[in-house]
Amino acid sequence: MVFAQLENLLTEHGFNKVPSNLPEFAFFFRKESTYVNVVHVIDYRQGIYITEGQYEHIKSKIADFFQQKGISEIHILSLLISEDTQKAKILCGGDAFCWLIDPAANRLLIHEEQVSDFYGMKKILEDFLYDIAVGRIGNDTADNAQKEERSRHSGRRGYLSAGESAAAGSWINISIIILNVILFVICTFTGDLLYNIGAFSIWNIIEDGEWYRVLSSMFLHADAGHLISNMLILYYIGNVVEKHVGHLSYAVLYFLSGFFGSVFSAGFELITETFISSVGASGAVFGINGALLMLALLHKGELAGVTAGRIVFTIAFSLYCGFTSSYVNNAAHVGGVLAGFFLAGIFWLLSPKLKKKKG
Image 1: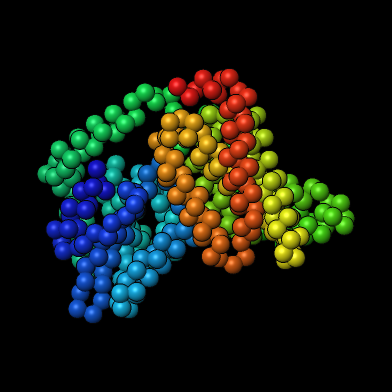
Image 2: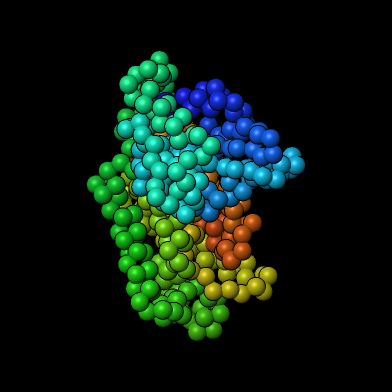
């Protein structure tokens, strides 16, 4: 596989690998006279979910790693390995030092807004990918990796990967995403109108009885980045969860997760007397993440090619990013993920059909 072969390539060119607990993330560094060059590699396969904010946070932590060692000049190039090049391009966002590798076509993709080279790495990577394409390197490694992958996934033939056949079996999730996008487009033409009448506000709910805000706030987003981040995650994890719990249960799971996220938010505001107006589907999205974790645990620690450990990491890292950022409704995130986790367990206990899928 390209991810494993890249390690050999970078090592041959004098880079040292910094160990990571997660196999999908790795970074390599080469110390020069007055600075350090870093190549940050992400195996952005199906089942890995990273927001733009999380991506930037990871890069900042890499910089912190070297700054703590007294190195102030740090140059970081990110390499995203993904067959879904559009998904990877969205993650890169406006980062000029972010290149894409399409392993299906064995090609390096560098868009106009990105740097054209990084200390000679462009030619090194292009030659490397060409050698893979013509079979000069990697045949044995690739064959072994494919055998391990087939072995690891044997017995799970009925489970679809996160992005597969989305429209065919996840129409509730797709409908929710479309509705969110439509309302955001409306908001761009109506200014603050929908935000004023639809954002979650505990005082409007208590004093004016506007309980509908619990629901309406789940479909409003502060800006395009907020919307894309939530909807991209929801697309990849929601399709998996809906296929396993069913359409009606998924709808209930989504809305109850969002509801309990708002309940946690309201409780936190009343206790701390820090009252805010908030919007976003994050509580419900965290709920779907929590449900995915429960389903993975019920399926012997793995579901649709995603392990429970990876899901825990995604949830924990997302919560960490929220708690270390400003203007984030973390109480809604906590309430949503707890609600989704336990609701998925309840659905499993009450549904013989869902129990049957476990084996």
